[in-house]
Image (tube, rainbow, N blue to C red):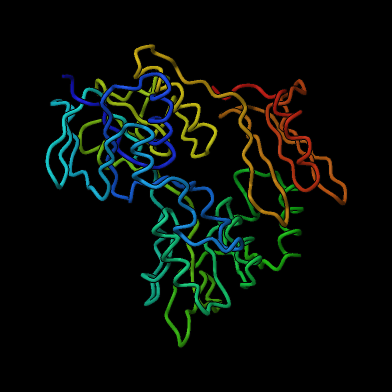
Length: 381
């Protein structure tokens, strides 16, 4: 009997590969190894679950035992991988050795940690898993003000969610605007105004250098020496692909684990998907690219090599105070933003020199144009 296909990781990428593979092959032996509980939950829901009153257990959509039965997969939860042994088609875990016919790395990404000093630096939270969210909920008891480091997508989603839950929020970012990697200036100003109207306090062009414990909370000090007080600090400055295991095993890595359009890495029979993967130079930590990867890789694992393709894939920012959808232009595309604004929203188009649309950003009521505009956009890959 051939060794099983082994998937490392039980997040959206790993479970999606398993689900798509089972549509094509019901019987191939399949093992999923994860340090987590192994149940399925939607990671994007972590940043807007608080106002809905969701606890960590309530976010689990499919329990591990149910998932294992549905997908005919051996889920080995709470397992830590020590090293990859691609030359031996095996992995070494803290509980023993597992051989594979093919290995899928769905290792995800880890929160970026800023070099912050002070007695309270170790208390800064980041929410990147269900366990992180549970700890966050526990720490929020009796909290009245939260400082968020990072004004990008996740930071703004958490800010909006905390405000809906009645908690005061300060957002700090070194950038001059919110959603700096996604929105042009006019759209960003509209977005900022809507979230400020909802009670979010933004502090742009500001970096936090120290966090020190104080009676009942913490004191944050920015690089200019100004102090801010809060009860809790949440870091949301971004994620970095998990590459340590792959790099130690000799796989080619860059920002992520380098993979081609078949999701194949530099080692035979080893593939990478999701937040850890850098496919044709692109790291796309969003739901739609992950689903495209999972469908393509499942076909390849089932015996029909299928290169991944990326159609235009709009990103929805979950901020009810200011509905926002962004379809970034393809990486490296040359062009400029053209914005149209009115009191209800902003419609921004990224166009090349000939006026051809390559991407868009919609804020406020303009999000109604999402579907119509998405059909006009070029593929990313």
